[in-house]
Picture 1 (cartoon, rainbow, N blue to C red):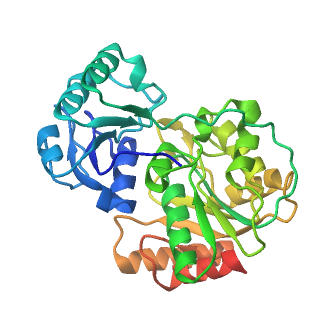
Picture 2: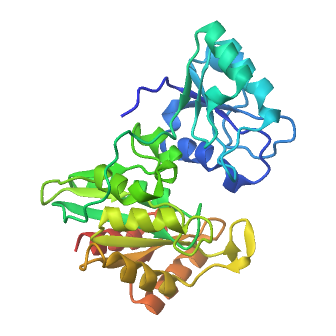
Length: 336
């Protein structure tokens, strides 16, 4: 678990693509009480809908840190952001980042923070001494969300299932595997920052032996079909040894995000490949159902799509953000 200064001002940089601001949206949607507002650079067009505040205004409302809410390709801290980040330090805010690039490696930020006694907190740091995976079967139950692509709903689905299980009185933990999930949960392991040889071992650490009735709901990463990120998805699958998977998909997306030449795989193809690869460490792995992102659809159209996909695949299909009876059926299938 991390000791993070809260609440937060969310920094959106100069982002113009909403999918690259998933950290900010994740905090807004799942830790709203920890967010006082947002700040953008010139040219930024994405908004979470939170109040637009300067660092000084955010401090006056109780903020203790500014979180970089952007998750761009490569995890870079852009030069155009530096003045805003320095302003936040000067206003009295610590900085929190989940980027691959480290705050302390930016000379201006390191110098300013040292002069003012402010903290530079990078949450994308795996623990030390991660073991190589043993492949040993562990006690307890595990559910892993997997996806047809990145930024497609794996975290949201895992969080919704965790809350749904809790509402049913089930002993459950959400296991965060990315920077946004770690900020929401207050702890976890950033899987994409782990050396590949230790990826499955990190997943074993994250979901250790547990009582028979306990569930770990593990946030998925990447996609087995992504030409850049399939490795982290595979290591997480093998190390998690999930008893259950839920496949996440966005109905309106046609190609891999940022790679238009790669078509999104079919849901059935995703289920088949995940189960075949997952049987290496858990021969009893099964798919409980589908999580569909139907945002932007009218309620009747969304319900019709969920019914059609459920009939086509022979599995429950739900949009966790809509809830309702479809989501209850999905939870029933997970726990069956």
